[in-house]
Amino acid sequence: MILNLVNKRTAGRWAVGLALASLATLGQAEDKQPVVVGWVNWADAEITTKLAKLALEDQLQQPVKLVMADIGIQFQALAAGKVDMIPMAWLTYSHKPFWDKYKDRLEDLGVLYEGRLGLAVPASIPEREVKSIEDLNKPQVRARFAGKILTSEVDNGQYKTATRAIADYQLDGYKLVASSETGMLNQFDRELKRGQWALLNAWSPHWMFSTWPLRYLDDPKQVYGKAEQIHAVARQGFSKDFPQVASFFAHYSIPLKDLEGMMKQARETSADQVVAAYYAAHKPTFTAMFQPAASAP
Image (tube, rainbow, N blue to C red; front, side, top):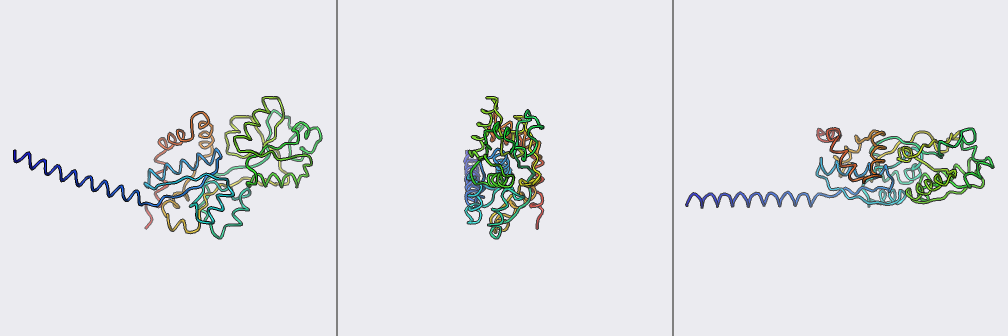
């Protein structure tokens, strides 16, 4: 009986100790400052952002708060210190004006992957009729496209590039029809099903290229530039405040084939499901992305 009493007292002390340890751990987790990550409602940005969030929370137990807004607002929020970082800045051409405007208050954490922008058409349209952006000035071509260029959000970098293309190529009679990414592609799909020609202000990587046979129009004036580099950009002081997170993004990359595959799968299920499955299957690869931070003095 005395032995049972001692065992109960010992077990009780262990239980109290474990409870206190758990509360201390919980308190540390709750006290850890979350990283506020801004993202734009683009298919590639959603995959890239949510995959990074999962890796940070699993590998570093780093809380991450996601905030969605248009790209211009994200750059303003970065400069004001209201958002810590964004992993979808197309700095080579499209978002360079934002970078130039706010770069004194920002940090470039590195390149995540490469992409491309341009005007794209269905591959079924003969190249002998439309091969280059210059061909859009042919009266019969303008009529087939109804003078419309389908594009995403008004005043984002890509929209502004299309505006320059209209001016530089003197595409008289054309107008940009702006919408969300989803709205733009739904309209594109409707026009294709009606047997109409459709012209997209497109970008890759994107599932649109694995859903429809598309081709970019030649851009002899290089208004859209060549290959784009997509960067992770942070507010000033971010690397000092979150050194391990900054190191991760400096080494974070996704093969383009894998990214486009996830984007397409996400349409059938969800981005959250696809990201979780990809992370589980490639966890050693992500663990290696944290090694430089782990070995840093």
